Amino acid sequence: MVIDFNASNNANGSSRSAQSGAAAGKRDAGLESASKDQANKAPASPPAADTAVKLSSQAQQLQAIEERLRDLPEVDSERVAQIRQAIAQGNYSVDSTRIADKLLNLEN
Image 1: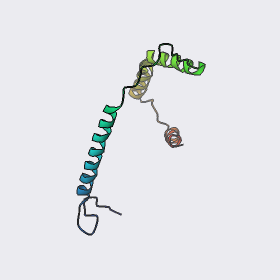
Image 2: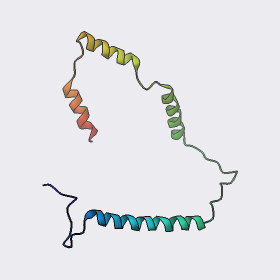
Image 3: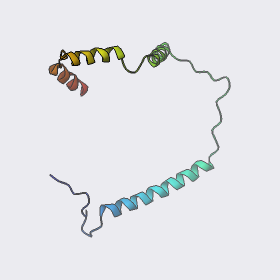
């Protein structure tokens, strides 16, 4: 089934682009009034100086893991060299079953 989004959509022949133009105009008007409302509001007060944030032990562990991950290189150069050598020697084989299983597991 093919749907033509450029064809007229109703009996009077008005096009979808004319409808979207009207909707865009309404959105722009709404944005203008929203920005005026925000300008009239008082700015939020800054947090008190004695406000403290405590991270749970789990959050601290995650933070430590993130820091260690930042120190690791993005590419495992040694693994890339091994694969290049195997390809050059003709020893590299692709396990299509393993690849298919991993692709199917991505959708779960």
